[in-house]
Image 1 (cartoon, rainbow, N blue to C red):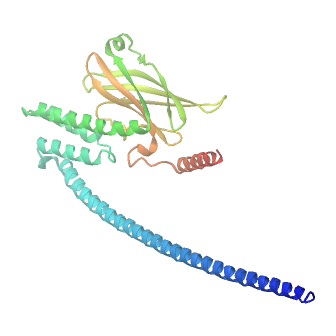
Image 2: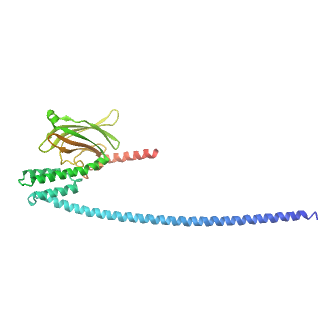
Length: 310
């Protein structure tokens, strides 16, 4: 009896080991099955998400393509309409006998409101004003008022656009002081900064024409490039109510512009504004030089690199 007891104990351990081994295999199989099920569900969900994402991208691309086509067709239609309008209106000035003063004033109103960002309309304004003043029609004062009104309206439309991207300052020309200084008067200068570039502006009023309501000014512009180098620009010009800043401006380096705008004029004083702005906001016919475009791209790349490094 004593010799058989170890065998019984051995059989018990073997049965226990077999059960443990069987349970471990079963647990492993269940675990593998659960992991497989989870992985399969994850892959299915991922595939469904990728499919939904691709569908959203396709829908977005289709919407963009359709929108682009619609906008392109709209721009083509607007360009054709503006072309026909321009040809029809300009013919009234090329054939002056075929249109009355009222029609010409109406046509210059249409030209100004639709093409003031791309055409230099000052010659037409001056020509029509001269024709109105020479006219003996009793309504000529009304025509002059309309002409001056549309000029002020165009300046009013352009200035907020330029101010949003640039900087400005206002000055008043005292005509009494000007009469005592026939050589001209120097207005208080100011330093303005646009797109990280500082320039100082000095305005000297040289003459004033009370009849045409224009002033002749000299503009001196200085920019400190480094400790030893100063960039200087000077311009001399007449400015009146028909000089619009998007068109009549002074070109500066780094594709920038500045313009002097006449806001008000009377025998006692004249109110002017100097506006300093990026060249991209100038008239559509004012194209930047290729060198300026390259310099602008290089500055943009440097700024982006500095931003990433921070």
